[in-house]
Image (cartoon, rainbow, N blue to C red):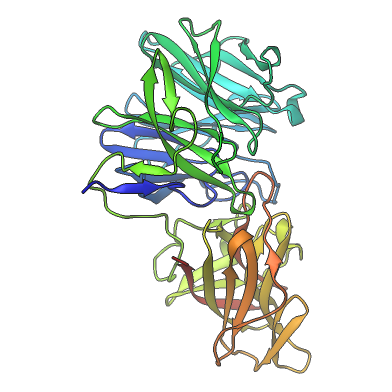
Length: 473
């Protein structure tokens, strides 16, 4: 019996995905902004069941800069190496490469400096020439809704010309915010797959030309239609070993971030047709039968030699912030901004796109406070902290529970429909709701995250015994 999948195949914030196939293996990466480690690398054998296998970026900004850092990447395999190109809108276009997608990756190399240079994608042509296309962020560059193409050195170290404007979407009726280009060659044409219209309200277009420098003709190939898949926005085209074609793209779901859908794709009259005649499908037969069920990790027992690959800090971490010991995660109560949205020392992972319950058991040792948080444009938390009388307090908003100092407390969050969060506390007599429900909100270009933190003067420590994410089925 054929196996079937349902969209989204990655039901969490895997923003701006790009996907490739190398042999029988599929690889995907996504934007990560200022999270460290960043540029996650995912692996699949069937385009449906994915696991995290590493990260390409291991360093970043020391402070939290919402909406900055690593924007939409492209992933390619060329000359025996994996390549990732991405734009930092405040720096320029950078690339890195690796022989093994699990790493190590080379340090980011600046290919083209400049403000507002985003969403780059390379193409190495059959004649040995190399090219690079990119979009523009109006917030930095003052211009947008256009795509620029460069000749690039074959070693991808630099662009070698001034660039040419190959698509000016200001000249196309109805187009706005053209971005996210992916560059391909197929059936005698050069193709640029690029979305327009905005992440929550737009569509997916493709552009084709016999010459890489144009002129290009355009067609909308995927739009919401009568479905509940708003957007649908940028992604990547990939084929299977048997020769079928697929397109992976994201849908903006607010607090849940940019979840990833899989669309069948076929060719008709020289153009790609995505989904069900141009509208998203709810699911279908798994592209490559026989795969094992898998999903990106969420829960962590902290028993490994390193943190699970699902975790990232909100900015570049200091090794003194944390330690794994005896099956526990120990966070130092370090100084920093009281506002969790501005605090680098918050260990985060993506908020699941389905209702779930999250729990962790924490013991506070010494001065400071520690807890479980949900962070987006707004934030809230449930914490353990000292009380003036020498006991401890479990707090969520204005609600409080008193416990003896040094007591291990199970903290939790129940995330319901619409990303409504109810914090939980278990001091020994079972979990109970604590405080008023909180509506999680998206951050800048990202979904909300689940976070663990500890803050203080550096003398205290919080000991976390496991982190469990239970999805409601």
